[in-house]
Image (tube, rainbow, N blue to C red):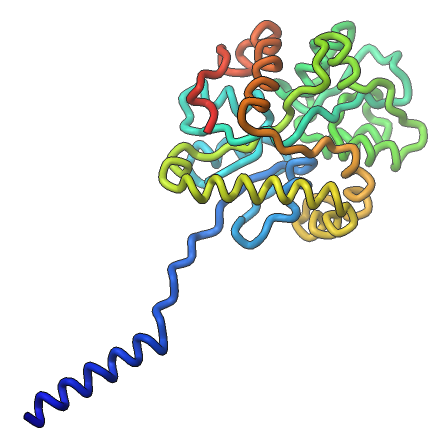
Length: 296
């Protein structure tokens, strides 16, 4: 009898410990997200601790890590995202998170040579489509490096994205915006703008963590809204992430075309852009237009 009572008392004691010290819930690992120096990095600045953010100077490093499975999500140039998908890389597009914000910048448009930050990107395509009379120089792949060369007078004319346009105009008074690429695009196509950046997810991650991807998309949308609404605070976060100095970032944010577009609106916007790229340079998007499997 005493033994039975002792067993019961011990059981009650164990249960009381369980209720007074509940087992902690397993916390999901942070989402491994890659962004680029510039607007995609800016747009991620107000994300929380649910994200582990890596910042790269050009898309190539993000693409390599995405292919290796070292990333869960990434923000890529729109054409690079479709090209990866068409080459069989297991990714899905979640949303357009940046529209066009390119400018033709220099001291004069008389130069015979036009520099763009690398071959195969949006600046390259816009240069070939909208400014066909120039010889295109692809010798510098990173926008930050090209901006420095322009400031130093070692390059005469370039197509650059924000925030580097704001950077060079503030750093060298002899430089000016000679042409707004988006206005040129609208005049040629009738479309107000084009998708520049797309948030993508690893296909495997999206299939196994659908709710996490949807939550990440909501967080990214909210981050963009907060960056646009509070450039001062966002600029401080941008500097903390090592993307760019706060002073340059704050001045550039209003011109960076940070946006969040998903669903049918994103598909329609991309369809127009990809159809033009298909004619201009089909290999830039992997040789064909996207099918339904491209979108989340």
